[in-house]
Image 1: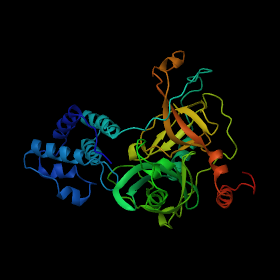
Image 2: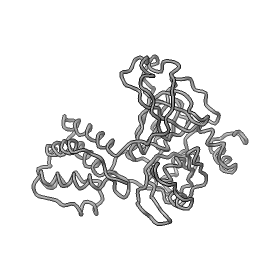
Image 3: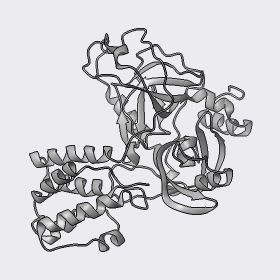
Image 4: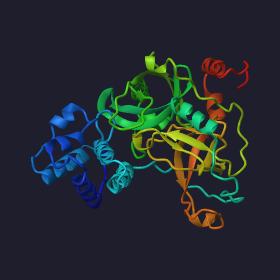
Length: 380
């Protein structure tokens, strides 16, 4: 995958901030900024005893790497370490803002086809933003069932890059993880599709990280072993996972088995790994806006990035109603009458309705999922 698109101004702001991080006037303090970056990468850096030169070298070289072989972003790790070393100060807040800016510099979701959109009723306001403790606890439990994916890229059976794509996936049944077809395919929209053999090879070589909350942290990867069902049009791929201690106490996510009938403005929640980074929750300010051009699509307003693809879209009972897969551009003027918010709506996000995905799967797999969900036989 390509390096970042961090502009010179942002890079200079980061270096200026790191110059003021406590301890970075010494080499050991600057080395502490590299905590969580693999030793082989750290050893290859051109270092200096001069504080400014050393920090410039560190940022320039790590920024040029883009993502590491495990898919993590070294400049994000350095920024996070600087924020941690600065504590709750103004400098720490600045580094927090820079961390978000740098994460965004790694790209966003690819747009889907253009669509017309006509608002029917007002979406915003009226019900309040508060949630219960039970809601938060359930969100935490759902997060344990959502993983960050690293998909290698193969071409003609040869490994081209260890990070062909990053994405999100989630446990739909014990040992089964659902994500997008396009995440496993690991190809750009303007490229020819992956061959069937390369697609299957990439699926079985996909690596999953659960409980991923900070770049540079220790993690115990879980491996996929095969793709057992997929559909390019419905944009899903179902992976069988290898046995792992990391899965023994991890439950699957509950599904809405019937086709959902959601009023416009229904709140939806997305648990995701935006930008291929740590787990994030998009909650409360996210609204269902209608169905897509095809009957298996739904659209909603929320915050996502490249890497969010494959994430579960959940209702307020924390049941999956759809799987996120991209966004479409809309005309901002269509929302000029919306009240209560100052944001300008430019995009609809889009997901594939989960009941349509389930119906498409082979009977044997559906029975396995139905048993895990404790549904009655023949309910799909």
